[in-house]
Image 1 (cartoon, rainbow, N blue to C red):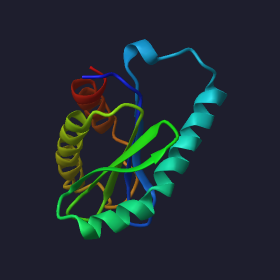
Image 2: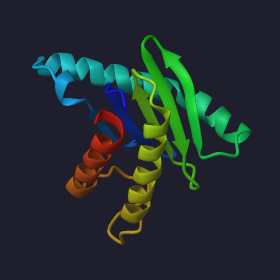
Image 3: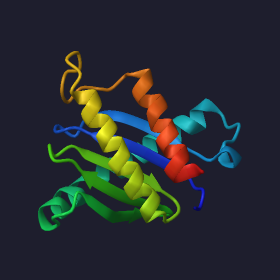
Length: 146
């Protein structure tokens, strides 16, 4: 498994971010300033949002939920997974890791289903659960960053 940088976002029906996280391997975590991190975060959001039209096109062509790599922007690859409820899981990554990303998408989708079945969660709203975030980090460590 190659360790790379990953940005993950769940996009709702109104193109709104439901959940987002960055996963970096321990060796790649740098002591950069918060302003620089914020710039990269905005760039990642822009790349993910720009890929939504391509994802929407692909989801009608393919019968698979996992759409693989749907776009490339500079060094970033954009992989996508569309849920049965048409929520879009988008991953930006700088290394090819198809099996790891596919497994991550499947497990995070299962986690999302469990979270959305919670009676206190309002569908298509931001997920602010620390438990969801922690489990996402565990899955990222298992499948993405090693």
